[in-house]
Length: 192
Image 1 (cartoon, helix red, strand yellow):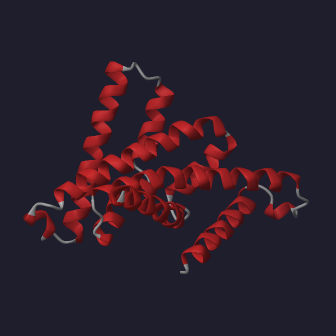
Image 2 (cartoon, rainbow, N blue to C red):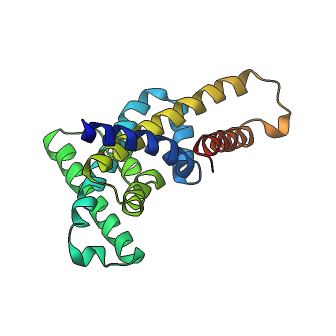
């Protein structure tokens, strides 16, 4: 039971913390694009969850090796990117050769694998000293965080389209102001 509790706690932690990270980088533009086409959200969230979880678990396993534990932050960054690249290549190979995936899915796969959200998960696990169940929860939480943030952005876009904004704030400026306010909200929940 404690393993499940660790996993769920890490998932909730990741959902809140990942949204702070996500709003500061590449994930923002992808979430805005996804919110305009919510049908793609499920696949993107699944891929983010897949990459976050598998990279997290593999990196936690690598942390059991003494030489890896002694590496500095740069060494860990190289290790995390290498693991993520290997997971991406394996997933790409399976999708292309076994499942005959469409080009649209393959494009989405690359975007899901290499964004600020997925790259941040192994670093968070490393800094927090997560166990394997917590790493799994963190990976699942990252995918759920992306889905939650995209859902909230979609709600904001719908309201922004109906509102009477000054001309200079319509479009992209309004979206980024809204995303910044969401980020502040998540920061408030986290107590930062």
